[in-house]
View 1 (tube, one colour):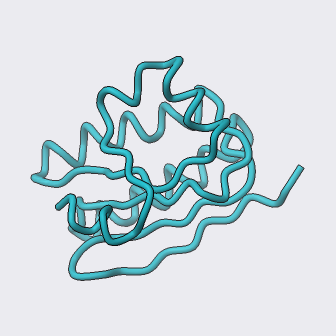
View 2 (spheres, rainbow, N blue to C red; view 1 turned 60 degrees about the vertical axis):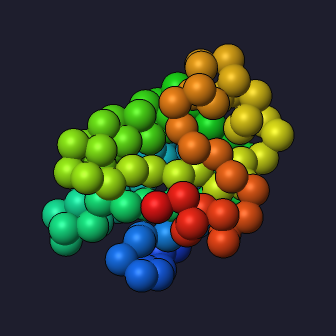
Length: 113
């Protein structure tokens, strides 16, 4: 199992998160806390780079679903960047590819806002 990591940067009022490792019942709270901190700072536009996520569980997907609702209530949104094939399959099964904007490069993610 790979180490779970979250890194953050900002670009033009948009928070960019890079998530790496397994996003599951053991790690979803770290992502939840990170997103909560971003929202508390007044930023509701997020790009979540999933290119380094090896596995996502329903708990991990649930964090993204809940965060998207809160971001949209505050005039923002969440764009998912470069999900791995396995993550995209989970999103397809859960119907999340229908509700999230999913893009494959950073410039498209930033342009989505």
